Length: 130
Length: 192
Image 1 (cartoon, rainbow over the protein chains, first blue to last red):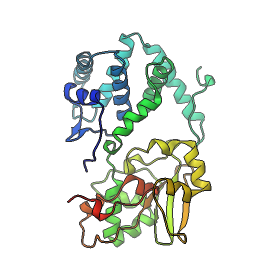
Image 2: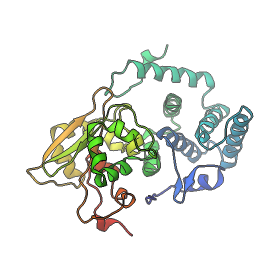
Image 3: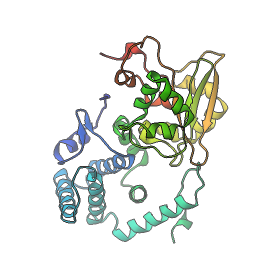
Image 4: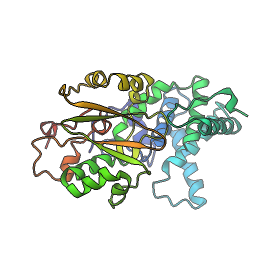
């Protein structure tokens, strides 16, 4: 089932120049929704000029190398975990944010999810930051 | 993972590096490329195998669990069958109750509050917006997810598909037809 998809120029470029992106004949495929969100954020930051694709590929390759050294099975299923690690590292290296801030927002979202009843939209509030 | 993604997106949005609508647009480009999208296979099997269809309508989670090639779904998935008398439509994807393993990514409009409230008040009007016109005497039933309950619409098998294989039938099953905001493709729409 290869539906027609219209990709942006940078998406095509990324798919061609970043090694290992899981793809079918029409372009990238994702195992879970969060993978596509990570991909989309990276594309948006690239479009804004935060980094070049060679820079991105180098950071991602380094994350994959680290993971393999730590025993990652490297079956492709963990590709976007490495991608997300690389993205968090890239935004820190570019001084967009830092690890402590990422952790603070992560915990705040965790709190927001916990207190939100099922069926209601999850909205981050100041009180979620402790 | 989801929390890390949310954290990153919030920070990048607050600092003006990304716009959520632009991210949604990118993700939507790939909406047919996300997840195993097992729903179409399940629907096609129900169309060809009466025993499976009965099991699916009795307990969708368990029935899907018996299919070796389809990844497991969470508990409390309920399949609701469309008939000439009744059309089913599902609302609520505001939290984690949307069965993306079955359906793929939810459409962006589906998460919007106006869709949710209008679908309950004026389902026929919402369907018309999606280009779906049903006979006046077809009842429209709207299902709103409650705690931990997720829904899959079993659409009606299109006419003119007698003798089709499951794989070929699955190609007719669209995401929107399993949410109830669309109908399966017409056999003529399939390029063979």
